[in-house]
Length: 420
Image (cartoon, rainbow, N blue to C red; front, top):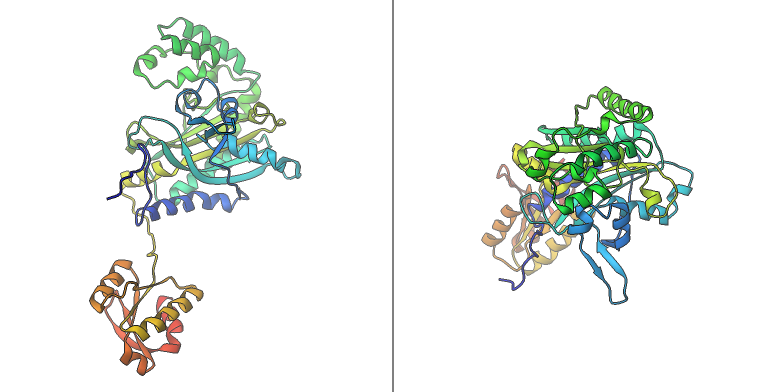
């Protein structure tokens, strides 16, 4: 037993369970790769101010959950708590927005870190796949991303998820609503921290999960009643495009999301089989974020879907993914000469595109065949000194139990034929 364990609130991905995570990542990214989104990967840590400015100094993420530290050289950094700010920073630094092809469409996959109370569906280290469309203000982009996420979930076999949709307005209509909401909140019996948050960003109070706060928020003014004509028209177009694509959604006038940078379209994917941690992903439009972090005006939209919670949603629905065995052919050698020959044949099979493995460790026939069974291989190649003297190997079908002698120099073609 090792002296060390994974840190509290984190997890290790190990086979065979890890194969499900890889399949989920592939399924979520597949629609993006077919829709013009290129892959981007950013560092696991960034300047702490990137998140303080972009995510918002009043958010729980920045004030309570971010892993911030100072390096030996005096740099103040933070483990990334979310992906959007990092991806936008990378796009700006590489001047992708100046290459004349807007929007810049990017997707990413990685680990993120927040200091939270560990519970099922909420970890201190978690995995997401995300997508960002940078540099264009177009309701069709918002609709495209929602549709692509819906396609990804349905390709996995998920059925019991819901899409919540709202508009948070823009710099024209949000200030009017902000003042009305602050006036309402000042009349409530709230603690000092919540009142302070209400003065900085009152929308954050609407996202407070405490029951005592939510009870007092009954009757709070709703942003949809304050939207300007431009935001109303924009939101209606998003709704119309999603509806035309056959994507079912629910209007949720109280949906805020947990980050300060959202404007106009905001949405969330929830699964009712996950208990309190029902959100499996979400996103929205963030037209002012580029300017917040020192860039030019670049209206943008994006989302992030949780791989961890998507796996939990699959388990909640009893969906088992069809994950192929990692090994198609397993080689069992009896004797030193057979080991050398079959080891070479395994290499040939791999070069030919066949997933092949070998019985390592010098085990006897019985032990090696157990390894073959555990590998999940469809075929097993067995050879001893007598087989080699005759120029053949024994090819066994592990499903039917049938076995036949195959010429050594014809092994690769015989395997391909049986696996076709």
